Image (cartoon, rainbow, N blue to C red; front, side, top):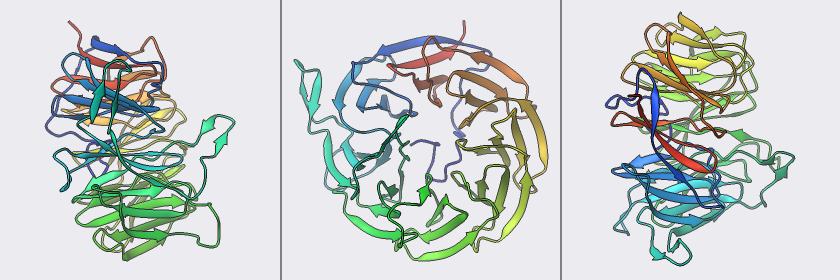
Length: 367
């Protein structure tokens, strides 16, 4: 799933990727309906990419296995099922949450599409709101313990869904007196607890099985970003700070001010280090236990870095991929694609995979 695991670390401890530069191993120029800006995921030898629909590609060659148009926008989360022979991919759109068939259903070669891809839809009560810049960004669901956890678009609610049929197993609502005022982030799930941050101020922990509130804290900044659950606590980034909260009760263990203006970034955590952008001029490495700065390197714009084999891969403002040494902060290489935007990559078998507007690309070590 996106961010590598239910906890949202962005760390793939068993993978490695290019370290000195990249060449395009393959590129898949997509159908006219695809517009990919969300990170893909990989299952075995298949890459699943989402953007106005779902594409399944062979990870070795980029050859399309199947494709289906739809309102789907977020990165998918894969959940095992008991009713089907194949898993379910949970995706969100401004109009709701959808469960998709990883096997692709039935192929229609003439139309270059598949039927039976969509298994269920859990629509929000409100139509998608279209602003000046298009629909709002869709939050990626999280799959853990045979359950899908996600904000329900068009509502102030977080839900747990059955991957077989989309049944709501539990639902928790914030700000019940307002129609829609709560802006949720991607949840983080670890050790049977679902951690959720939302505008304004709030961090909440729910028991994953029942949805019972474990604790709730209000921090001293309104804008909070996606949490990361770790063995040392819950990392919560904000517009200008990073917090570490005790996972058992939400107590603030430490707080580090970065003097930033972050409005879109997501941190990564690997080997007791937090990697986070301030969206002004720097990417920071902080000690997870103490919050002490380890290094700072020039970096502008929002990003959601991923880490593998000692390298931090961070896409700068959706137009440039930078590889940074996780220990020293030294830049190893930079890649600028011919098309933008470029999604955050995923890592596997020495290759980076990313959605790149009207195509999906695989990047290997430069020869």
